[in-house]
Length: 268
Length: 320
Image (cartoon, rainbow over all chains, first blue to last red; front, side):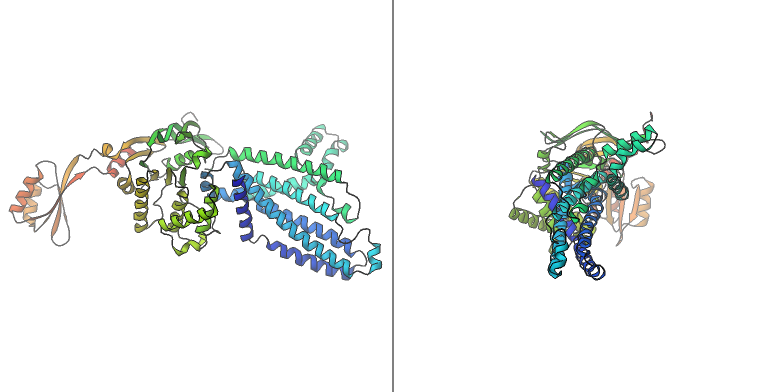
């Protein structure tokens, strides 16, 4: 555990030095500019749009970090041969891999936490400046704590995306890893359609393939409750709990696969 | 107990996309390195030296055979606590400073922060990295990176240290410093296993060597046994030698070859017979003065060339 923690902290430090956290500035500027512009253009709907836009931005910024750092985590070490010295130290290959994973998760947690704080600050500002009659028309307050449910599930989704990117980076180039990770993420968002595909097409082979993909690729749409929380619809805690268990199980499976692939690999 | 032991260690790769065929990078290496030895692992480029070191560090897995370090299988985390490794042309996180890098590696060994700082500072002093230790590694020259690489290999005061081409990228002064460092390690009882294709380094440092060519072990043993140190001629340096005297000596086959040096001196290559004393007496009797007389022995380079030129030509499996 100690070795995993040291590797994880070094990944976080590297992301800080690589100026990954600059994206937070872009996020804050984007959100503030958007809230100002939307406030000028819309009447009454601005808080809902800001809520929507904020959650989408957190998701997209997080996804960019997870994919573009995740795909290079192992590849860069192997390509530059820095892994040679590291693996000669008292650590197992799985320690290295899990350290890399948790380092990127730490980077994501800090990013998401700061973005969430900025998001709530903008929403609090909107709450303060909105007249009481307008506030009364909102289905939920601007700083609705339920938004945290959506953000929590976004974080879980990003942890899964990171694990998938890490898995691909253990055996393929960054370009291919980015393609494959993005493909899995996109297919995962349409997973429900794959399950129902058999009912709409006559070919049993195509239906079986679609069903196979449905079982292998995680259902990313399960992590998306943005619409519900923005429209103040209830998201039961049971659903959150089940989805969390589903996500963590998938993450564990992907990480175990990554460890198996990485442990057998020759560093030529 | 041997510090390092390999038994029929073999590594083959599949090469070629359309017609894949096995390529033997290392073919049945069996050798032992005793504790406290400075062992030179020699061979031309592509001989399989780095492959062997990667197998010993378990960066690659053997196709067959086995390897042990300090009596335990390679890859054992307990063994890794007791060894150090410098890869060929090392690369480190270039956003870190030399100090930070060494402290990071020390943290993996579980040392407390104060101990990490102490070890990092002492080792950087030992390899001659001064104020540059606070610069990012991306600003380091190849030679300075090599020094940092050697320092990181020693961060845990290893019992066995593996150095892959440790002199690579170093200037003459740096090479001398690293040679002295290797000898200091030997004096502390550390086993040093280093690969090189620079034979002068091995001749200066090693108690035993192994010579590898085309993936096969050609020979291994004590340098003194390998070279036998038998005299195969003499080199006589004289001054005041007249040209007609030299010409007569060459006619009488007392001198095989003569090279004119600076300030009227000559280096003369003498055969084993007649004895050099007689030739020297003749030349001195005709006005020449003795500067030096040195026996000519087999060098490691001569031995190496003989061994390597006898290596089999192909490493591609004929059954492919």
